[in-house]
Length: 140
Image (cartoon, rainbow, N blue to C red):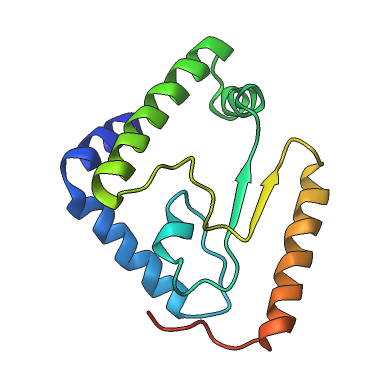
């Protein structure tokens, strides 16, 4: 993944390809699109933009467990990946990944169990769908 990030930093066509596919998926309607850039790419068409976050130590522990790494290796890899991603997003998109101003909801996933986090997300999605009447997403 780290190598992919470095390649994508040099070639914006890679991100544009992913962006195009993301938009196609969103235009189907009634979908959830997950991705670090999804909120930005779909900001004009998404009915609900959610940013899931957690403190760095929690994120590193989760990544270490998922990838079967030691904590220091996970911390190092995460730092490198996020550094490259941050540079890439500033260079190709003109935003800082830390900017969460476009999201309707920012949720710290360390506060709740996975099940309770899912309940919060579902409640938000159902409420937004009810508010907009289940309409199809707006076209860009």
